[in-house]
Length: 73
Image (cartoon, rainbow, N blue to C red):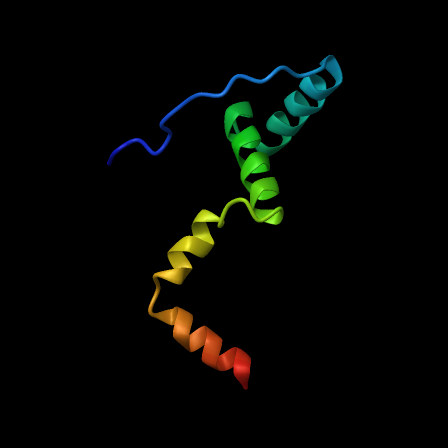
């Protein structure tokens, strides 16, 4: 399986954000880079710059038409 991550992004964060991120990653068990990637993906999707990867797979799914037809009922 090919790697899905194709580049790295370096961001500066404050001590307060670093502490909150450390707490969040300890609580969730998710790596800090994964936590940040999830947050970025969610915000980009909310603002309409990105189609969520899960929604993109749904677009290609044969169930999409069935879901739309059920919503019309």
